[in-house]
Image (cartoon, rainbow, N blue to C red; front, side, top):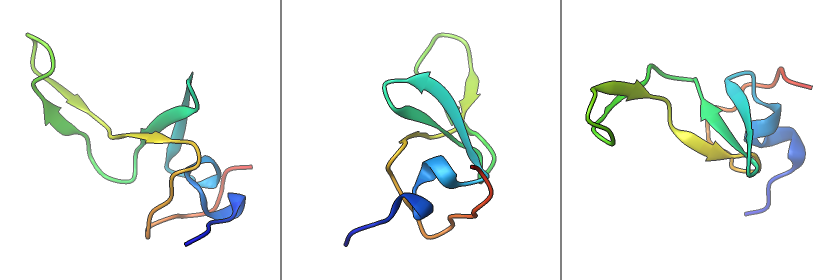
Length: 61
């Protein structure tokens, strides 16, 4: 399946660009617990700028 730039994470209102290697976080849902560090934390999923999903909501330019 081919996606257009209009339906990728970059153009989604829930995408927060982290300016790190073409990636950001998806804030469409609450963060999830992470055990990646010694301190408990909650994180949003990291997604690539050109990823896509079925919940894309246009809004970012």
